[in-house]
Amino acid sequence: MFVDRAVIHVQAGTGGSGAEAFRREKGVPRGGPSGGDGGKGGDVIMVSDPQLTTLLDLTSRQRYKAERGQHGEGSNRTGRDGEAVVIRVPPGTVVRDMETGEFLGEFLETGDRLVVARGGRGGRGNARFATSTHQAPRRWEPGAEGEERNVVLELKLIADVGLVGQPNAGKSTLLAAISEAHPKVADYPFTTLTPNLGVVQLPDFRSFVVADIPGIIEGAHQGRGLGFQFLRHIERTRTLAFLIPVDVEDPQLEYDQLREEVRSYSEELARTPHCVVVTKTDLLPPEASPPEVTVTDAWGVFFISAVARKDLNPLMESLYAQTRKEVEKEGEEEGEEWWIPE
Image 1 (cartoon, rainbow, N blue to C red):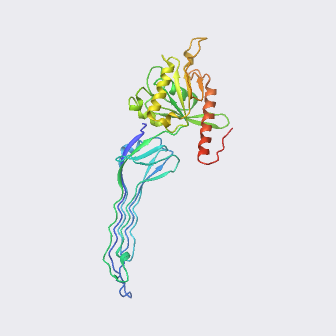
Image 2: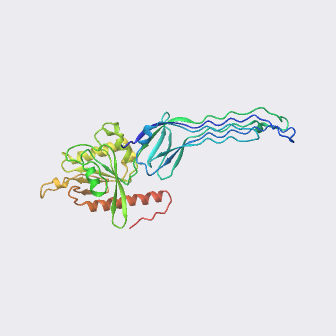
């Protein structure tokens, strides 16, 4: 089951209290205070794990509590730190505080770590309060409480290309035709219920990742239909492909509607480079011309038939070139040098 949203409760460990103790050792007259500090409470840490592709595991266990720190002891012995709790999440996960909406962090690379709840510090023992004028203090500190919060986790697929279109626009068929992915495909109208990822392999060891996103309908930015379940997953793509089937009643209107839904959701997302892919050209009568779609800011327009495997190579080569162009641009913005395969 694909789960892309989860809410969990995390509680870090409380710090151990400092100790009140005095040395009572043979041969050590007036030994003085010897109470050690308490140990630090355990943190709650999230780690990116590439073997995970969904937040399903977090729906069966929704409360995570780290170990508290141990109390300090005599002879200036510090209490043991509490053991941390490690929660593994898939790359692409965004974490926010549920109550405040505060952005806590996101996971983009394998092994990324984020402390979502910090353990409380350990309290000081009475040995810490000894001075030249107060040589036998009985003062000690309790350990501090660990952080506690509810956090919301949202998974946003990390893909180079996002396929955008109405239900039954041919997104799943195209993904199955150009990759080894096996999304559900049928000859009746339905919409994909969960996003699918596929890796497109090209000659010379070149590849890129394509995401088949659940179909968008009018009002999706307001939560209608699959709503945000669609729009959330295209925020990280480097380029979008708007799929328009030839058998739709008004191709221009469908394209304009898709663009408007994306723009209504996010102006930044609307600025993502995109192309237009007219699908199902195998349905056209012989000698018939495909419908025209007027686009002003798309970087390309393609006409394909995924079922007939017709004209797929030019589309895949162009998508690869565009994604490499975006990777190079990202490298320039970060001040890094990128090696781009020819």
